[in-house]
Amino acid sequence: MEIILSPSILSADFSELGEQVKEVAAAGAPWLHIDVMDGVFVPNISFGFPIISSIRTLTDIVFDVHLMITEPERYIERFLDAGADVLTFHAEATDKAEECIEMIKSRGKKAGLAISPNTPIDAVVPYLDRLDMVLCMTVEPGYGGQVYIKAVEEKITALRKLTGKDFNIQIDGGVNADNITEPVKAGANIIVAGSSVFKGSIIDNIKGLTAACAQL
Ligand code: DX5
Ligand code: ZN
Image (cartoon, rainbow, N blue to C red; front, side, top):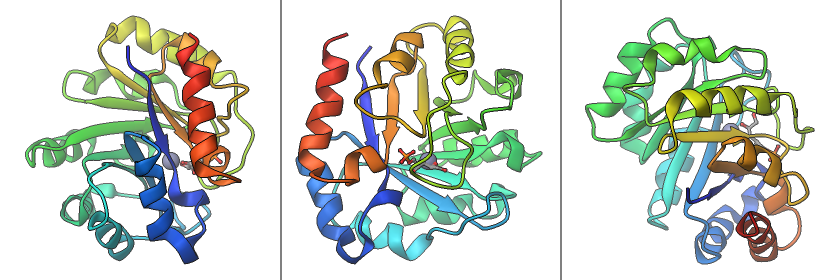
């Protein structure tokens, strides 16, 4: 299965956000990961609609929007309006997962369901038929630059067994060129990387991460 890299702009230099987004696209990354945090579901606040709609004008790259917000059903329409192509919300953040998925799918967009490291895959299993992607967080959501939690690979292996080979399993948190191959071998095919892309040369980092996967 093709490995898709999704650089997370949470680690971008926001004074040069537009340029850096264009650089990610020019380097050939197929997706762009956009982390939205509300200070309630996670203890951090990032950015919202105006940032997403402004960078939407710059590129056609797939906007992979990761909502770390409580009761995401309140804002799904607006994130789709802002330009999300793939919209992912957390199973722990809502008791209306089914409605959220339908809201996204009825607009012709891709729906993802995320689980934090300690949430079992049982939280996503009932929705697999309607979902386009499951995100297994490999750090506690909230901050970039944390250490990769290897134990999550067991969940990835179990989930891949359940879904078969064509389903999208994303990982997010602590991934770099030295550890990227392990989750891919376990069955992840969409890889988010923040600090390991934006620290230093974006283009060299994207090449390095892509090359590490190409050897598999
Ligand atoms: C964390 C975010 C991640 C973050 C990853 O809550 O969901 O997308 O940007 O950053 P790194 O790759 O630095 O762990
Ligand atoms: Zn994320």
